[in-house]
Length: 326
Image (cartoon, rainbow, N blue to C red; front, side, top):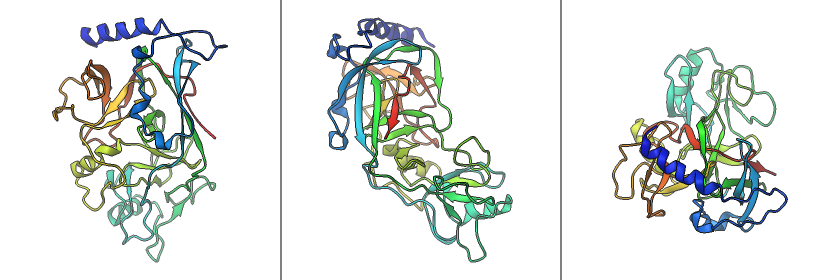
C-alpha cells in the first residue's frame, strides 16, 4: 500500500471520529459536507422512501453514521436466461468444468461441454433442463438455474456516510454483497460454481444463468448484478461473445456505477477524460478526480474485460447486515 493512499485514508479516518456514537439517537451532528455518500447520484424514481441518516454498527464493532436507502426490487427489464432448447441462444454463464470452461453464451457449445463432462442437462429431444433454485433441490444430473422474480420486495441498504479504512482488505467471497447500483440493484460477488457445491445454488452441474447485462434474480426473487452492467458490452466483446448484448443499461466507459458497501463510489473502467487509470490498487481502486467529486475521492473501477468485472476486495469497513430485504 503506497504512502499517498495511507495519507488520504488517514485524513478520512480522522473525519469519521466526528460521527455521533449514540445508538439510542438516530439523529446526526456531523457536517454533511464531509460525507462521501451522495444520494443525488442514485435513481430516486426507484426509491420507496426518503433517504435518512441513522447510526449503525460496523463490522469492526464501532458505530458510525450511515445512510439508509430503501429501493423497490427489480426496477429494470431483464433476461433472457436459460434457453429452451440446445439450438436456442439464452443469456450467459460461467462454467468451471473440465471441458470448454469459462465465461460464455448459453448455447449448444456450453451444453455439449457439460454433457461431455458427464452431466445430463439436455434430454433426448434437445430440451434444456431448467430449474428454479427456490423450488427445491434441482435434478441430480444438472440443470440451468433460473429463479422466479418477486417484484414486491423492499431492499434496504445501509452505507457509511464517511468511509472508514479497514485494517485489511475485505476480500469478497462468492455471492457476497458488494454494494448498490445507481438504480438500487444489489451488486454481488461471483456467482456460484456450476460444479462445486458451496451451500447455495449451483454445484453438481447446475449452472446459474445470467442475462446479457450480468444479472439475475436471487432465489428470494430480487434481481442483482454480478457485473458493472454499464461496461457489459465491452466485457462481452473482450470475451468474443457476439450473439448477445446488454440492452437494459446505457453503456458508458465513464459512468457512475454505484456505491460499494464501504461507502466508496464505483465507476466504469475509464476516468472522466476517457483514459484508463494506470495506478489501480489490488481492489481496483485509487484516489482521483471524478465528475461527481471534483476535489478527488478514493473510488473503485470495474474492468472492461474481466468476468465478473466488479472489485474483488474493498478497502473500507462496512455495516453489519448492511443489506436486507423483505
